[in-house]
Amino acid sequence: MATEYVTQGQRIARARHRKGWDQATLAEKVGRSVSWLSKVENGRMPLDRMSVVGQLADVLGVEVAELTGQPYRHETTELDSGHAAVPALRLALQQASLPSGIGLPAHGEPRTLQELEANVRLAEQLRQDAKFTALGEVLPRILTDLIAIVNDSTADRDRAEALMLRACHMARVSSNLLGHHDLGWTAVQRELVAAQHVGSPDLIAAASWDLCGVWLHEAQLAPAKDAALSALDQIEPYVSGDDTIKAMWGALHLRAAVAYSRLWDQREAESHLEEARRVAEVLPRDGNAFQTQFNRVNTTIHAVEVSMELGRPREVITRAEHVEIAEIASSERQAHYWTCTAAGYHMNRKDNEAADALLRADRIAPQHVRNRPLVRNIVRDLRDSGKLHRQREILNLAKVMRLL
Image 1 (cartoon, one colour):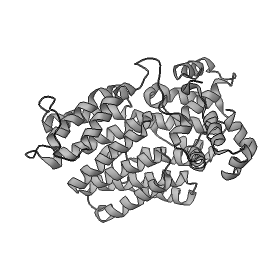
Image 2: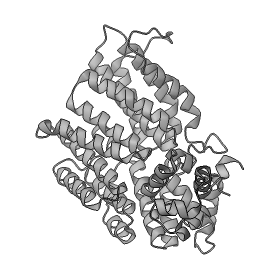
Image 3: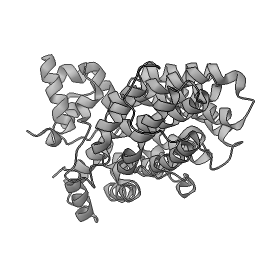
Image 4: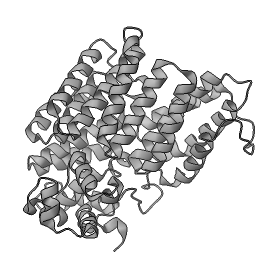
């Protein structure tokens, strides 16, 4: 069977068979019933929480990507969401990770730092809009130009390294969201080098925030939680300073909240959410330090996600109703909100509302939405419902996602 048509449930069953386990054995190890596992493997129970997928991967001894099937490829360049740029991005990141001083072939005169700062700002907008194809067209060149400048002994190295961190952040986000998790790891390693070279608390916090992101995407929850807590300890002496450090303090608390929610620790998750809310209240409503979108609206989006991961479907919807989603200037964050809301409705067996939310997310940021394992699971389930008032649109979405 072609890999894109293998369901997540079939992947779980395949991994279980490799272990030589029957359904009763795996169900016992994850604290579930045989009936639940049977429904998951047969596609009658969509996995709508990363925390559950991560638990299954851990017990089965496989990487999360083996169960999700990422990365996903589509039929046309227009729909393929930036995958075509991955080879060039991978090479640029590999070169960026080489020790300084290693000679690389020149590819023309690099742009100036001033020009690159402008290019990075434009690329960051593409990242916030989740336009991965367009981002992939410009990001490798930005990285190669920065490599040349960083390796130039006469350059403003701190300024160049700060830009390198921002560029690698975009590489990390797009790689993880497209399912190239090894590439996300390469990107964040280069971020950590840049932060260490400059030594400023804000860059250290930004790189640590991305490190948490890589581990969350890989469902490595204990390392993600520990990295967030360690970074919070590192920057705590500087929090009373400027707004950037305060924003990174809040953003790291949101990382910790998500990690704890996936570890099913409600008390700790809510505690970190509350600290993030407290900090957000004294910062600008449109805050976006180091592309974190740390602001009041994003803390409420995270609250929706935390409730979803904790398996509290009614709370997901209640919290979603209080999110002022139009106020956040990020298509990626808006689509993430609507996707989590769709999952909440689906958990509450309100499939028409789930379909509405999912289609809204797809209109806002299709390249983000169509690459999410969570979305694929919900679309597969809604596809077979036959009772939706927007069934045709769901079937069209399933078709472009190669789920028909």
